[in-house]
Length: 206
Length: 204
Image (cartoon, rainbow over all chains, first blue to last red):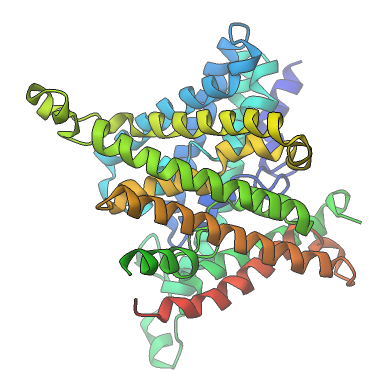
């Protein structure tokens, strides 16, 4: 039992990663990753919302009538996202401005709805909480990888600090401007999925 | 003329999929056949056409700071905008539920064809995204909001249709094993997005 509870935390990190394997929550994963910092903040916000929505709905699971469960889920998630939005505005205002509408879009992030539907409504609160944290971190990890590549090659910096030394630019190195545009994010995700599936042969499609 | 500009801008320049990544999840999952992609595109366009103006009215007559003035001048200082996420998603979910019952009653064949994807429109980020952009851009009239909703939905429809057609062709090609399915779908979307980037140079 102990082992199984623990697995609900570790499984979504790589083997059953919500972004790479289940192709969920892509919208925000791509839009906020031009730089590393908003990517990290977004990953943490989604982890918080996912963990607490799983916990709350798992506690409520025996009291919710089946027919109206979607509305109940959406209301709980929307309330949590509103709290996250106000916290971000209060403490990291510049990042909150950068994330703009994508914070609100955490509500429609399919990872959160998907985990509530598939896991929290049929499991006890503690495994649900861990499952939420695991999925949030699995999502955040992919965001950080994409943000790392895009900021390093698009801006030559990480977290806003210059990484590629000045002498490179003097020698003729140029930042890849395409990295900051939407298509680059899509192609990077495609390549990450490719690498991930080459390593995990059982995920490949015939 | 202004409305036409807004329409073209929201279809091509600010395309929901290629410049904002909205509705990506169902875009990748449902773009395997042209027929279902077409049905979903139509449903999304219709829901956006209806919910964006609905949410616009809600935003301007209930939620915005001072929006409740029309009930009584005493309510002028009330700012309910912190409720906007919850109310927007409630409007969208309720509308999708209504649409589902309506289609089930009047066109069972379309209902069966769309299947699970119909209720999932409620969590399609394109629709919530449309509502949030409407709030951010603060359109002047409800007509503009409606045109924006329709244009955005239509742009999403075009995108998923193009993608489904390409993927139907792709099923005949020999693709490296790890790249089959979603991996390649993402890379193709990236390439399509690059093609759509040419529209961003247009001065409207």
